[in-house]
Amino acid sequence: MAVPEHCADPNCPGTLQVERIEAQYQQEIVRKTFWRRFDIAICRCQRCGKRVQGRHPLQTSQALGAAAVQLGPEALALGVHLNKGLGLPHADVAAVLQHGYGLQVNRSTICRAVERVGRRGEATWQALREAARKTLVNGMDETGWRVDAQLRWLWAVANETLVFCDILPGRGFAQAASLLGKDYDGALIHDGWKIYYKFLQAAHPSCNGHLIRRCRDMAQLATPGAARFPLEVKDLLEKGLRIRDRYQAQQISLHGLWTATGRLEVEMDRLLSRGYRDAANRRLANHLWHERPYLFTYLYCPGLDATTNLVERILRFLVVVRKNWGGNRTEKGARAQAILTSILGSAKQQGKNPIDLLVEMLCSPKSDWVLNLVPPVQEVRDDSSPAPPLHAAI
Image (tube, rainbow, N blue to C red):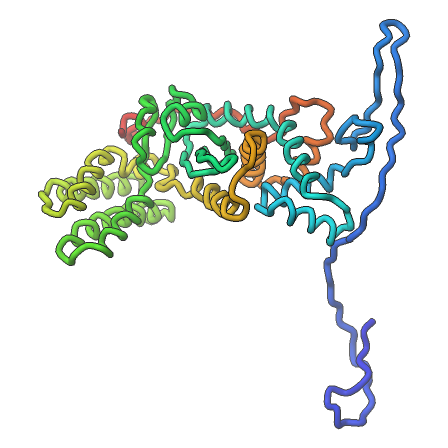
């Protein structure tokens, strides 16, 4: 119990009398390292002569001899999460483990641990790819990446339940199709990059966020007369988002949503039918004519995202990681980066503890262990409403 010794006024000689006791609570961590010893039975079959070695559920490896001293699964999982989940370089992860928990590790130890966990996550990573291909709605985007100082592209697919990433040498349709498959027939939300339209069987809801930013940037650089067109487009796109928000707040009915959407499309068609002298405005108008069937898909299909914010949040974090330590030095490191980013991102989407999942993966005796991150296959429900289905709307 904490009891003050003197009055708060340093010039007062009075004594203190306790009036009451109040409670204060504090939550703390335990900075403690302990050793765990496993006594492993080495056996040999009396019939076939094969050697059989026991394995405790907390072991992360069956190595003995010179490699018998290892980090435990909790320490390894924390190190991997700090590196791939939070973006700390290997040296900083080693410093956290050393200063925080007294573990004497080198950054090379963390690097090898990341590669080992990446190999353990290969089966889960492949299962997430297959699940993404069977998901009805996906957002897709890409960003530059470095592997051994060479330009690569980090591709990401994300939806409400999973994240799948891969690091590939190009930015074309072949790379995009390697993630979702060339015959993907769901709704693919993207930024309008032309290669995405080669998914011929997919629906292509436009990212209104990219279009609004483009209009805003054009208006800042254009003359007052030329800025009128991008500002009018921006107002119409934002009006569509407000209509969506009103429907989600149950301020308008489904019939009111469709009526407002029809009026919005008429306004957009009238705006795009004009002729424009400014070259930037003509390019924008041509792009909007191309995107016209996809601009308001999210209003025809309530619940569909109007932007690629979901997948962009994944890439924003990876861009920060890229600035911190420049990418990956080897192809093995790039593979582990893609696998662990997918697993940790999916865990975040599903609200699961990433360290618990990494410990489970490290302690599994099976190298092809699949974590409980793969969502069930989504099925298309029959819809008897007069609203057009996803593909018909496009």
